[in-house]
Image: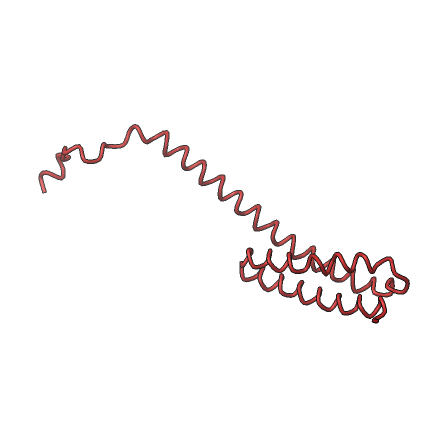
Amino acid sequence: MKSAVATARRLLDALENFVAQERILLRAGHYAQMAAVQRRAAPVIARLCQLGAEPGVGILAGRVSALLARRRENLSGVLERRNFLAEARQRVAAQRRSLQYLAPYRQAEGSGRVKRLNAAV
């Protein structure tokens, strides 16, 4: 049976791989795939949390801190994108409201009436 430290190192290697995949997918704009990677990483994180209580695993705290910092960067990128999309959604909603306000004043389509300027051509 492997020691808790060896298992934690192996899991940290896998988690570093997941964090690198997240970064690549974030830069490419593949947010659904990024969420899938996060779901795959969840059991690894849970197991690392369990192993954290074992003696000797504390020596890996530096690697864990570095991973947390990179993960925060990834999540801040997702948050920035979310805020951008929320602002874009608000702009579209405002434009829709203004169009609905102007809708009664548009010319009726298919009314059969031809504008005088178009008739002269």
